[in-house]
Length: 222
Image 1 (cartoon, rainbow, N blue to C red):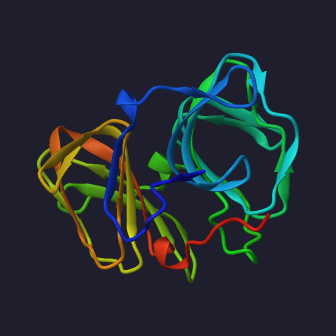
Image 2 (image 1 turned 135 degrees about the vertical axis):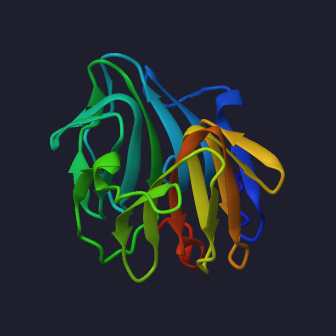
């Protein structure tokens, strides 16, 4: 399967307006944002776990990165509530589940294959004091990518000129980018060479941002 696979194009998906599709596991549904591959894929997806649902134990050969958007995600490493950022590098294994139900934003097969840095963070706790109405946390940085979380006050302008591509998920509130309003759940991907200029809406915004990674994008090794 190929979905939004051309990394040279600007892409916006308003995920809240997208229907849920069943996964191979009962009680777990997904909204696909981009994908190259079948069930083993380089993929960006929003996944919803019903109460008591779980995947079988599996190994993430290409790594897994996710944000808990609501509820509590659980596995052998602990209980991760809303607002948690998790990185499970290549070769890590777990049994994902959620006794109360949860929704996560997850990226698969997008790691440096030599990365072995496994960790989780509460994103809001990592934020520095606001500067010009923007409080930012650097969640992860390596030679190929940088990952941020930002909380924006109403009306402030968020700019990013990093090379190598820019990706944004609106977690709460809204921003206007290129004349288009991106509300909760909206996902934006800008190609390398295109800068991000976004204005926070009347209620401000909370956004997750990744930069630099599209220059290294490739299909999964199957």
